[in-house]
Image 1 (cartoon, rainbow, N blue to C red):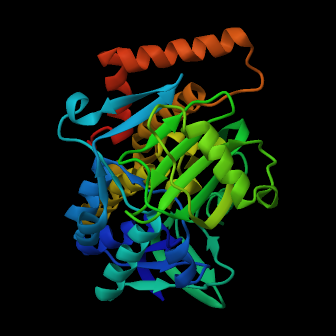
Image 2: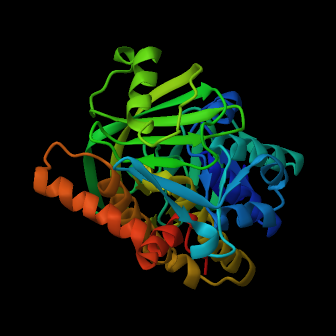
Length: 386
């Protein structure tokens, strides 16, 4: 078999890349080791930047997003017994976020690719990358796929990044001394906007997925065991961390999913080797506090699409050569913002009284200074794409 771009991974990055290339008349094959049902049910991110929403709409896959997504024009920072709203509509006019689950984005993209006759293969075993330097091809399940370019969109644990020879890539990592216990609950949200709560007991986040499904996160030790967090304990802890302002009552209900997410930052440089290009979690991971993971993947894919269009249509390699450098500017901005939000809102066992007072002072500054609040808002809704 032969195609122009072999794509490993049917997450948002791989599927969106395949669709954008199709719109440019460039062929691709997507290989995914998981089943279609698995990738369409896998709960991940749910906050889409303005640029991500615009990209999906412009690509013709945003119809359901516009109908069912929940636009938000602010978030609340809750600490010290009070809530402080960061008003996006005032600070960054015309830009907002939209709450729409990653699995819904994946469903929309799969439907679009299949409707267009795209080649998306699920439950593909033993994918391997060969000759990425100049004549790349993929093997899987006893078959061979020759291609001009390979896009590694298969996440942190995929085969793409380890296929680069030793000594080529440099990695930067930071592990945080806590994790997030996340739950989905069949209960209407208790707030119209996201609540980021700083509490001496630990951080908590109130989010949502639909008008009937809420999403919550609790800061927990990095080695936390879900089995030690029965539903009653989770709701009691969420109440203790969120019911800290007058008049707010947390609505509880059936918990339908729970899991622990480690908090870490990770960046690989460069994001390319020969004709192999890494995108999304295959190249970088951010702590989820800043809601940047899925949005960075979309940004990578936009850059890679333009570079591949120039390569296939004009024979130009300039944009492909500069792919990594172009992406990493945004990646490191998102890494810094995610680190900043994480350190602003979480409790650290290493902090003494002095450190905790500094944190509260910083929160006071962000919530009282329009300049500081604008910095948060501008980064949260996402910097405009070039």
